[in-house]
Image (tube, rainbow, N blue to C red):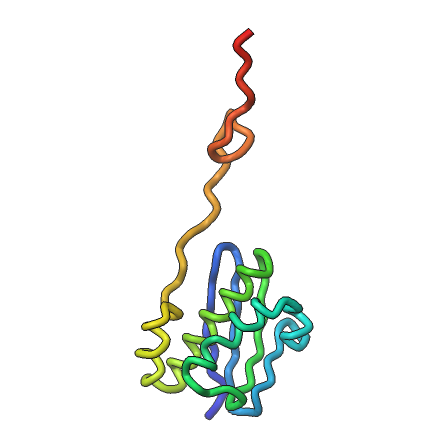
Length: 128
């Protein structure tokens, strides 16, 4: 099996994921993923596709991620890994789709409107 590449997006984060047979090493932006995501909740989000498909420690993953915050980056990586696993074996799609990992979350930050401090917030109203 050669390298499988896929793309994951969430909010403004974009993750390019490269999957290959290996021992379970996950590298994010040339760092170990536990060093890149020190919070255990974010680590579990990254590992979720492997635990659902019972393929833990079977694939090496290399990720280039940019944009957004930590949570958005972790969820973008999760989507990219899920898509790569489906490319590797089509039978994983049923399991991953049941948990909602094959769906790209379309929610984005609403744009700022003119004459307002944020998208919906208004400046303080003064009666007198």
